[in-house]
Amino acid sequence: MNVQNGLSTSFWYDTWTDMGRLIDLVGTRGCIEMGIRATATVASAIAQRKRTHRVDLYNLFETALENQRHKMSDRADVSLWQYSEDNHRPVFNTKRTWNLIR
Image (cartoon, rainbow, N blue to C red; front, side, top):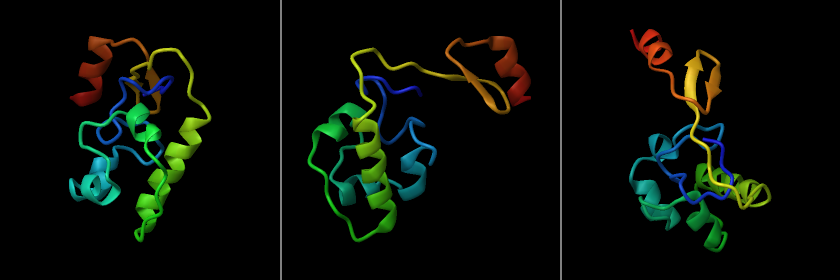
């Protein structure tokens, strides 16, 4: 995801940081520990107050949110699709996707 305003990017389920999908790192327990709903967007998570956690990984998530806060804009988020092994583009290509998964 290319996060702009954060309104359509899922905090837990979209890959908006270099860490990948955050839910995969901490499971559903992370939602409870961080106090961020499973359905939260990046924008709604940023709107909450910053917290300090006992678990270092959760503090990394807070740092990622803080870094994203400074990059926010009024434009809509852009979904990126895997085009090749190391390349993502905003346009979906059925043939490329088929070749990547087979």
